[in-house]
Image (cartoon, helix red, strand yellow):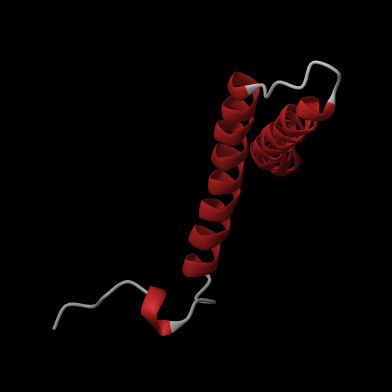
Length: 85
């Protein structure tokens, strides 16, 4: 009974950063296209908040994928941990 619950938690750990990155991308897109509106000003605060959220989400998912691939030995030799001589 524990295994399905742990898999659900693991999926949530990937979905939440994915949603964060998605919201960040949409915030950046909205800030960029707001300058073409009638007011014509750029929303810098919304853009930088979106950029931070996007980078955090992508970095978390990329780091998780890198760690998993390193553990399963899928990486190129230059990314593998160095062995002591």
